[in-house]
Length: 574
Picture 1 (tube, rainbow, N blue to C red):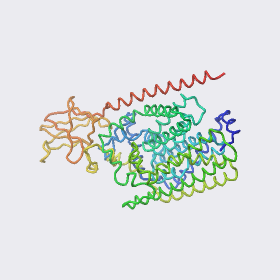
Picture 2: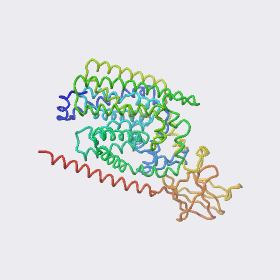
Picture 3: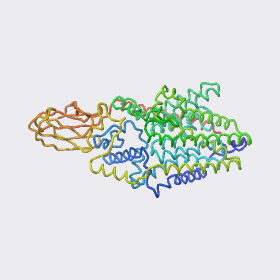
């Protein structure tokens, strides 16, 4: 790693704005190389592309309606809706929707990736600069922005939310190291505040990646406690994690509490359980086997490259000398690498079954998102050896290019999916729903793809002709439905809407309890003869109110920490 003479001098100087501009340029240039195939092949339409694109479009539509923070996905289930935005973290779908206002929709995926991978490079640079010279840290940043797992996510999975979380992962681990004392450079209050912010940001980006980040920083805190022979790193870590959870509570509280209202266990249906996705696992699904083979191959490549880089980094440190801080970093990153590799293979199944919420990560190879951080750091550390560093650098470039070329050939390229989604929304048809976000008592496969907003049915379910009725839709938005029904006979009214506890239904100003269709959770109302005014509104439930309250309290605590850190710096200055 960096020599013992160079590192203190560098830390004393600090990183300059010019240095960060160079890092920005390198990161952005690498991001452009990553999305280069998009310019002539269109958008990489991986497994999750439609899900994310639909979420962006739905969010943008609700913003036009004046809904700043959407909760109900209006166009899911072909217009019947689902509470997707309650459970799926908001940063990625809000970023995608925002980009849709700035650029053509077909360009949004590429712009999203370029932006996020630029952030990834800067994040990695911030960590690598702790123990590597500027040039080596820049190469490490580029290696992280184009690491094999990132390429798998971009080209074959199209999981934009996980990509965003991975971009923040290096700075999360750096902040964790500062909190537990393995890396210096900040006052403890400010280090704690920074960790809480970036930790919350990962949870607000992608839940599976956030679970992995949580277990990773926990390993850091435990390691530091043993290394320092003190419980202080554990207490600091617990304080940082608690504050991070508090900041994200406006999302976490409803997502945790309202799981009882949806079919959340569908997230672990056959093919999505960890036991089906360990490296090189074979199932009865040929398509699943092909993808798992691809993911396993990428994981093996990343493991081998991380091992080679770790050995080269260790030899470089032995030759050049290293600071105590760099030595601690090398050891803890090596420990994290070993843990990530172990969690991808079948002997770790006992942990997947019993560790809290770990099984909802679904795919053990997702630990590559953690392994990629030591991978880039070891590469940066090894680059200080001129000859060996250049050889390793060339190998990294070749491996990344070969991995990218292979994945480009394996994925499906399509520029028509977003226009098709936009057309379906414009034609009042919407798009498919999600199994795990389907409200309880509903089977969204039974919902018709084309249904009127309001249907008049006979009073009795036994059948017969529906009586004549006049329907006037006064308002129909994502979170409010208002209509007037006039009939000379009692009727049943079927709304194109799934029942969910957050919907409050009023008939003529009085709260009413809706009924369900026989084979789905479609909302139905029994109305007497005459003119009835119906108002349906998506209201703020107590769990959402509590989550907002805790987040506000966390924000106040965060401001107090920044203020305390600033005062400590002032008192310490001459």
